[in-house]
Structure formats: C-alpha cells, structure tokens
Image (cartoon, rainbow, N blue to C red):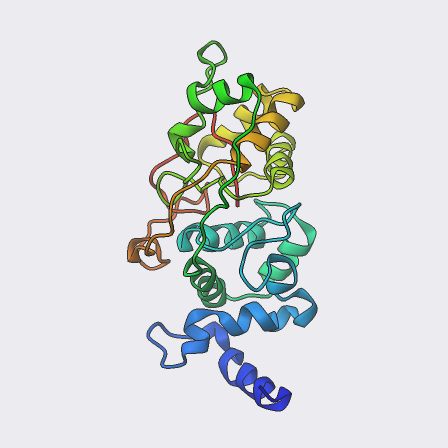
Length: 251
C-alpha cells in the first residue's frame, strides 16, 4: 500500500477516536489493526507490532504473546496500565495515549488472532509440577491449574492462559506481583501467592507453565467485550471467575 494512502487511512480511522461508536462501518477501526501497526497517538515507534509482532506472538523473551487472549482481559490490562495499577513505564505511557474505545479495538484485534501453543516436550521439576497441579495446602496455595487450567489454557475471561507465554515473562510477572508493581487482582490474591513462593519456585513454575500445550483457538465470546462485562475495579479484567490462590498470572 502507498505510504500516503496508508497515512490517510490512519488519519481517517484514528482521528477523534475518543468518540468512535460501536458498529462503525470502518472495519479498520473496529478491528484495531491500524492502531496495532501505527501506534495511534503513541506514534509508530510505540506501535504494538514493534514488540508483540505482526502475529501477536511476542518476542519469546520478556514480551508476552497477545494472540488469542481474551478481549475483555486485554482491555482490562490496558486500563490497569492507564491507572497505574499495573506498572511498566512504556506500557503506562502507551495506554494513556489510547482512548477506552481504542483500547477495546486493539484488544479485539489481538483476541481474534488464531493461536495454538507449539507442540514440545513438557519439562519441569517435580516440585513445579506438584505446585501447578496440586498446590500446597500447608501454605494455603491452591493449584495454579484451578484458575489457569491443567493445560495452561486459562479458566474464564479473568484468568488468562499461561501456555505459550515466555518463561521469562511469567517469572517477571510473579516478581511484579511480589513487589506490588501489579495491583489489579481481586483482594490482592496474587501478591500473597507470589510472596509465599521462593524465587526458585517462581522461576520453576514459570518454566513449566510456559511449556504447557494450551487449547486450540476458540471464538471470542461477546460476553467478554467491554459493554457486556462487569468490571471489577480491583481487577481491571472480567469480574468472574476470580483467581483462586496459587495461580501465576500472565498478561
């Protein structure tokens, strides 16, 4: 596409996006594709694709995959960045440059991307496997699988899949919860969980969860969209179901 034509489309689609209405005939605005590739008011250098990739799979290291995640969950995370309940200098700045309508549009775009975790051997220490699937009753830690699924597929809109997320990213998020840099979970459950885990346990859990197979992609339910979901102000994601103790987070 000619650069001038593309720039014109970006201007038309994103100009005054704070008043974008549902059901807009502009398919680019409704899908969020132009936001993902242009960055909107955050600028091209901060476009989503520069870190999360054209296919939404991330960089395999510290940047998470977005492809196939729940629409309402991703919009909730952008809200959390905007409010400072989830701390990350670049993401906070970018999120604050996006209107609520834009946050929802780009979330819908990535939610619609197909994703299935690569088939690979699932390695992990016995201790990590036990914590993930059975928890530790003595410490009040429920199984991670109770919220994030036995296959790492996620359980409900508020509990994201861990399968296919980079181990380094998952480990970093546990550290963020531990330090209080993430505060968008009901009743501070993930802060308590992360602080009950040793750094070695957290790293082992992250490594194990990242290799889980997940589930095949599925259609995004309309119930996860912004207008249909009930927002828990402590969570920034769909209100049900809540985290059970012992489940490491992902974006």
